[in-house]
Image (tube, rainbow, N blue to C red; front, top):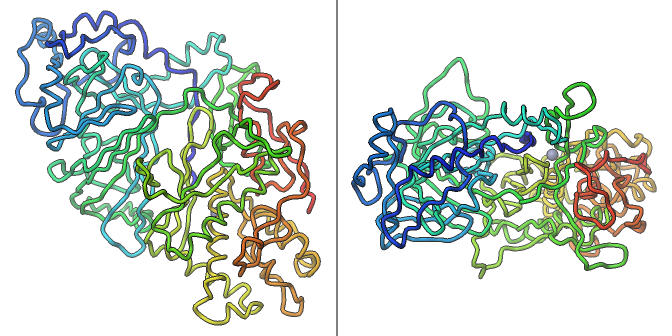
Length: 622
Ligand SMILES: [Zn+2]
């Protein structure tokens, strides 16, 4: 499941011009000492607004201004009305954030009460790029239905204040100028004008002039741009749609809302091919999770994509090169791994390892297999110079934070109650750099049925354990581990390489000694799941029928149950001093290129706009 991302242009400074200074003079001053005066910040965009502002923008939900009734119109407001527009009139803070409202401080301060949700956006967060990720969390039970799927993808957004309104802009990074001193950079800034998704009245001003706006309609279907689904869907009925839960943290805000849809229009000529896949009912009430997370302050240094190595990637057009053309730049999607000061031999521990939580909903007997599937990648990261670059964690019971897979800053191997025989490994990427910010493997319960069918049909004649149903837990657990490892491979940026199944000659994969040393396939990222080429007379041990992600040799048995059967650590490690940016030779299928050269402030490394092209040596085993 790959969601291609667009990439940076030079930031939209054009939206941050000086008009806000003049506009601020028209604002109505707060009426109490507890309500600070709005500052004349530069957050108001300059220039005309595409499409114009609505005459009386505000909440779509009934009730008008919080607390009922509007403040008396000022002369400025009357003048604005006479000119064809009506300037919103902020009210005293206490009149909007009434007693009994639940307030949570964080990236934005949220106020929830009486069926309404307000954002109090600190000035420091205005104009900042954030990701808004929408996930289907609950729906009516349907055969094959899939929840936990990011339906609308993610969208980069930016809150901007314009007088007594706050605009929500969509942000795209398709066109860039890498040399910002190039005059064409100004042209790109002007041409790339970010759309306004929604406009909100400032209901009040909080501390340090933070505008307070009601955002209920964002999450109950009042903003069609944020209700994207795979097929034709009606707009949610606001009278049957509600904000359910809100949690705010330093870097993210999590919101859950139920949305009720009427029956979808029937379009016989355009059937929705994804309706069965996503299991979205034509009508009914669904629970959606919105995760709004701030993008990193400093974008990671991108790495140029090398088409020989199968990474998911991000593309953009560069108008600032000397190539006498619009150059296409493609960056790989990868995690940001940076060395800490803690070392072990020639390996370093990362400052922040890639951490996957194991879904508490995972069947208990599969938790250990899931952990193994995640950490099976550790040898590949060691080959890239990182000790415990990727780790598995269980969700702590006493955690103060709500750790859910839907959160855009929590990566998780989820276990989802779906009859679909599949698993997927989607990622959320910083559009500016290709940095993977979040990844959630989605294991559908019926993946076990698919694995059983595959294993039985491919190597059942070789393995007595597969000749009786149900499979023993030790075998099915290993098969689930295999799937987890494959999907984790996707979530660290690796595509199907479609090379692993063709790199070894047939007589080699039928050779007991060869397979014991090399495995039957050099990559877990192909569909060469099991060694179905081997014949009974080849006497190949079952230990080599499953492909492991970490190493070509010493692959764990498909029935392994002990930690000692985990993939052996590689015996050869490249010294970091020579590490540079060349990936280990076992890619494609190696995590090396995903983790090296992250743009971290590595000592002695020259500053560059992006990492150099990945150099991959020829696979030793080929
Ligand atoms: Zn796959």
